[in-house]
Structures are given as structure tokens and as C-alpha cells.
Amino acid sequence: MAWNPKKGLGSSQYALYATQTAVIVVLSYLSVVLLGPLSYSGISLFYFVYPFFMVFSMWWGLWGMIAAYVGCVIGAGLMVGLGVVPSLAYSVADLVPPLAAFVIYRGVLSKRGIDPLFRDLVEREISGYKTNRAAAWFWFILINGVIFNFVSAELGVGIQYAMGLVPPSAFWLWWWGWAIGDLAALVLITPVIVKGLSGLVERAGLINLGWISRRCCG
Image (cartoon, rainbow, N blue to C red; front, side, top):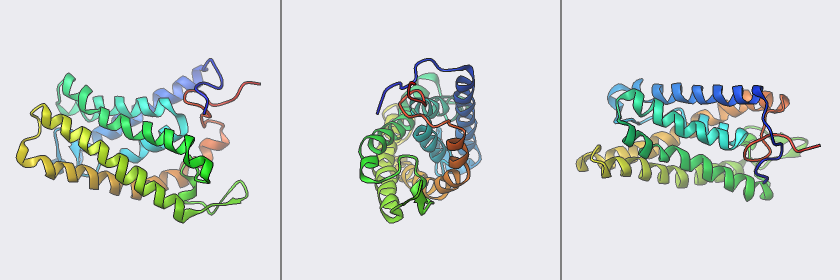
């Protein structure tokens, strides 16, 4: 997994990454404000932006992860009334899952027949090869929906609790709300994004082969 297969990004690539960051900021904000009483201190019981930045990170590596963090800082932090320090701190919870998933899928699971772009969640064949959808869903739910998601809940709610933003009586309510809500969003929305957009993004040559850029030299 190369760090930067093609050095020197073009203006169109920067525009793409800026656009997807703006999309994540808006969706992060909407994920919190649209639920009204089911959201608190930037925490949403159905954080529907979660699958978007997970998929974007699989497509665009570091740029998707940056978008996840910036989106939470601005959209689910500053724009909903949190201060600068709390927003910067608890948004680490949105950076860890895509970072860890990118490493595991690109570095480990792809070598075991699991598609690093999540296409085997919805496709029976990829490039003429049959996929193992049962295995794809098993690892997807275990790794992204449970392990990394629960770590995210611990970081997000735990940091806010440590900063006095979540009262002790409400800790487990928002911890489980974060964990279950993000899991539901991931399972329900990820297949729709992958089915609807992965083919288009791939045909346009926009998938990053490394952490930063998309094509190998030569």
C-alpha cells in the first residue's frame, strides 16, 4: 500500500477532495440538527454521515479521513454550538474508524479476498471474479459496525464526558445511542452509496491506489 503512487496532484483532484469535504461538513451538521431531541452536544442517535466518510476514505484514502475529521469539527461541532477545543477533541472519534478501516481493508482483508471498496457487499462478481458476500458482510459488521464503531463511541462520548459536556447520568444513554445509531446508519446507507456511486467513481479513474494519490507512475 504505497503512500503516494503519483506525486503532484492536479487542480481537479484538489477540487474533488474539497468538494467531498464540504459534503461531509453539511451532512455532519444535518445528522445532528435534523433529529432535534434525539441529538445532544454534537452527538446524534442516527449519524447518517458516518457511512459517507467511511466510503470516501476507502476511495480517497487520507483525503476522506481528513474530511471525516473536519466535517465533525465544523458540522457536528462548531456549527451546533460547541466550542473550538471540544470540537477539535471529540472529533477524533470520526477520524479513527476510517483510518483503521483503510489500514485493515487495504493491508489485510484485501489479501484475503475481501474488496477494500466494499463492492462485495452488493455485487456477486467483481471483474469476473465471484465475491463472498457472506464473508464481506461478516467482516464489515464486525470491524466497522462493532469494533471501530464502539471505539468511536468511547472516544466521542468519553472525551465529552471528561470535558464535562455529558453528565454522568446520561453517559451510557449517549454511548449506546452513538454505537447503535452509527451501526444502523452504516448497514442501511453504505450499500446504497456503494451500489449507486462506486462504479461511476471507478470508471472515472478517481480511486486512490495509495494514501494520497490515485495512479502509479508511468
